[in-house]
Image (cartoon, protein in one colour):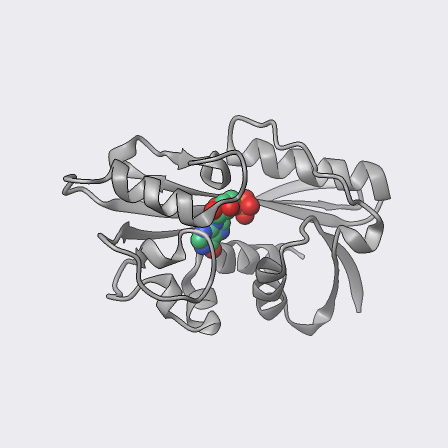
Length: 189
Ligand code: IMP
């Protein structure tokens, strides 16, 4: 089994990525390589942030690693919250406040088109490569479901009539931005 560091301590993400990556890889978290501080996410784009995080882990550990950065891009809001998705309403990761703000910003708007985009930076043998995964959809007018995390109760993927939060983890992974980005990652690994 090959070891690879995934630059996260988020249990939801870890489980999602494990399910797609299968049993060929032993996923190692930040805690397990003694990185306990927050890695600065100072990039202006998802691509920059994914790269900053992966390079940080590589410089600290010298191990093969990957980092992801995800944003929800809402068409009527010119791509917001985008790279600021985690800190849309507050400085912290307050999912409930973010969802309330998103509903407020979209009040009265008929265009509710949105997409999730995940960028993954992989560093293998010191060489960096990027892949991305996108899922198109729309923002519902009220929250539904209690699965997943973040904007899941508001995001209805294209071709479905339920939110990500109403789907099983398997259903979400099969079509999600992160599922698709990880599938692209597996292809190049
Ligand atoms: P991160 O870059 O993966 O940490 O994602 C940034 C923010 O995007 C998170 O704090 C969530 O608000 C949101 N987000 C990322 N992935 C998902 C998802 O799969 N569902 C819902 N929201 C997500």
